[in-house]
Length: 493
Image (cartoon, rainbow, N blue to C red; front, side):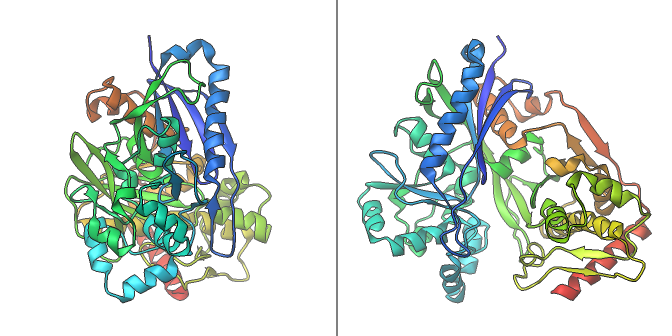
């Protein structure tokens, strides 16, 4: 009997349940959006109870349509938006405050005070991360300071802290398992990624009681059993828990040092496998725990690009240059080049490797001969330029060369963008047919934990379709184009 896996993909905008077979084929899926709550400018929250109810709903919808196959479900896996944090009641599992989302900036003053006090090197050395409100700890410090009642409950053990995976595991197991995995723990600013444990010094720095934090397990470990409140006929193990970016890296089989992946979406997440040893980083990339397998950590450098597909949406929604995002490839290829036009999408500053919050977007190089096709092409090209910049930074900081670049996400259907990215980076670009990459990554980890595959090499051998884009552009042309981009960026910094 061929096993099946249900993977929960709890993202920033929605909760999805995906039914996979052991070869990664999507057999069925169900999804529900949740509300985005904006109490004031710069604040972003989610109703964690709504997320829990949506999780039950999508599992229920999926199982109702597939009752004849439910006896084949071997485990339930979870991938989730990282850094978003929930404080919930130990007795009931119900949230005591809205989840504070990774995008939320209310912790900025907290972070600035810590930077001013000279704590940056301490935090970087232990966590591999910058002091930034993007991560969980400053959100918690703010919440604990604003809510003395929550601080008291956390102090006496009546309240618990978790990222979304922890919260869902707690609810799915009826409060029997309070745990997270290494990939999610490593995004909190409270976890020592060298010693693989919560750090008391960091917890004290952010006023977080260490007793309120979950047990930390390997992603392929078991996190209890669940019947999803009766949606499943039998209790199945929860195995395969990973943050979404790491799960995508896992799904792309970037198991060896020098393998990188880029997830194209609203923004782009770039991860580079740097192997089993941490490497010192400068001001550009941050270090992530890619996964821990058989007590052996694998590390990655991570760079986030804020505007990728969002730049194309801006052309459509704000400028009216296109009617549908599907037409951008035809428009971009209708002209032989960008006509000297560069679009720098610094709509909310520039992230890695520039890290300039003050930078603002610009279109440079326009003349009287510039057409909308040139601007559309420049917008598409900006995605590839940013990936080139991030990979250059990572290679310099890690002291290793990128061997291959694996891509996923909706924009990978744009053949011009994929070829241009291969040309600019000088690296073979591999686009795999992985329609639900993060969910499949968690499910693959579940296969590993179940013992259905005994090694990463066995996982890598699972058949799949891959489209390969090889660099074709002459080196001199690549250099000329990239120099033009760097000049354009310099104008907005």
